[in-house]
Image (cartoon, rainbow, N blue to C red; front, side, top):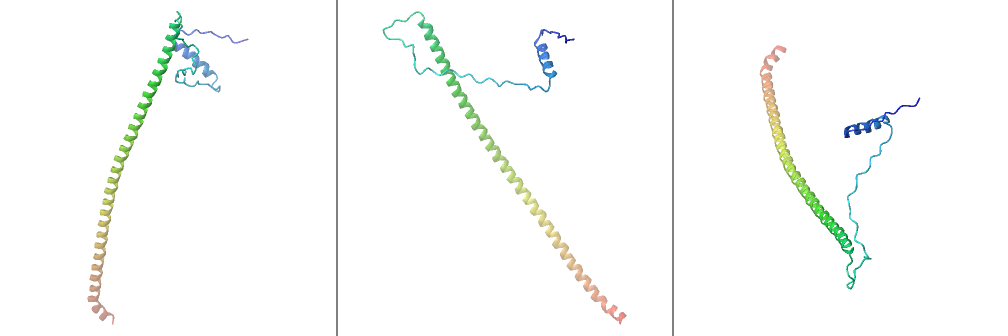
Length: 166
């Protein structure tokens, strides 16, 4: 038996979207083609050669006004597009310059702070090293003093010990 297809007429946009999603999910392995975004509208270039030239002796016909209006409208639209594009390019350039200035300023601030941190760290390490050197000198001098005391004590006790040993 053939499958019965229930035809569902969507009443709202959400129902239509639901139907489309269900159709896509029936075949998940099928490749989906997503169309590219529409390109920006660009007006036609003005014609290089105008075939419809009005002579100075010819009278204007009843349809010439509408032709003139169309030509004028297209030219104004073209000029408006050109000026808007120039304004947009100018604003983009200003924005990018501002972004670069902000990045440079931020880099300068961070480099100053980094240098300050490094300087502080070096001072701290130098102080720590100096303290350790002082401790090692004190310990070394204490050992020398204690060794001297020990040797002098041994010298004092040697005569007694030597007499006992002899």
